[in-house]
Length: 141
Image (cartoon, rainbow, N blue to C red; front, side, top):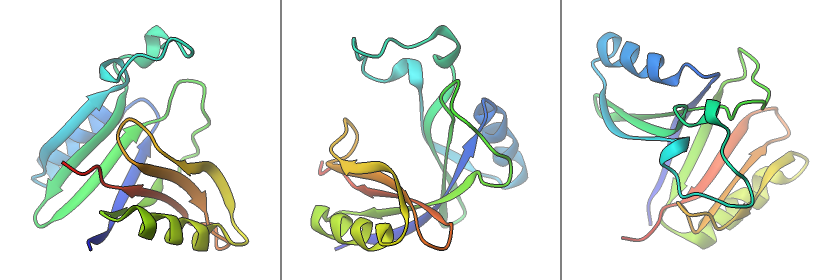
């Protein structure tokens, strides 16, 4: 069983600029980057033009560490200072469920743990201490 904690930065439309900055400042290597425009289309939620180039998800390698980041979706609130979250990544769906449920106790669920196109179990929750976590079970390859 694998369990990792990964810092996750949420940017407000400038994630591509941040990626270029971290490539230079931290000697980071881009391992993965996907824009909202590259995600599978959902006819129930058409993608606004201003969202297409924003980063939906990116992963950088900094030394031996990973750093994840994305942009907010246009119109979603972004507050400077609260843009750092922690991604809890596991290869075990049941472990993801247990962790999510524990963090949600006396906390606030922003997105219930659910299957997505990129994870068999993904959700976001702010715990009772005000720390926001993204819990994700890794898709089996």
